[in-house]
Length: 145
Image (tube, rainbow, N blue to C red; front, side):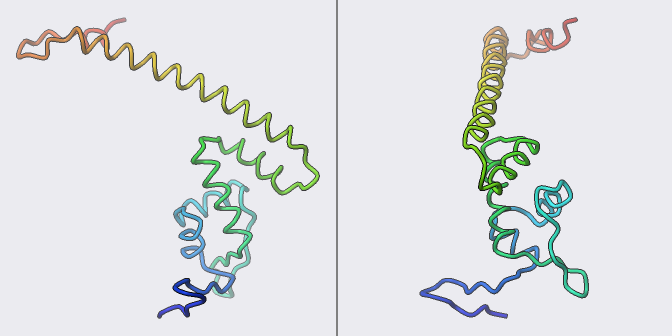
């Protein structure tokens, strides 16, 4: 069934919407919506008489917030804290900044670890002849005790 058009090519939105529509509008899967709900990141939503979840505009906005935070690599715990601060209009922005700065420090550590792995692998690949002989410094290094 076609949805009615709102303005110049946009689809009219009638709220609430089922999980599939909410997921699509938030850019996540329906499975992730249920997961976020089970973790408490998204408050339980109203259900129809037959048990289908119904999501409002605010729910979709929250899902977009979660998706963006996940895209930036925040952990579930950090997202929970950020959601709480986002919903608390009396928050101090310093609390948000502190979470973001801690996350940046964690990213720096992870990047440094990945760069060290890359250097190690590049060195091993440089030592490997990559020919028909069975000798392989890459496998020797992996098997080392």
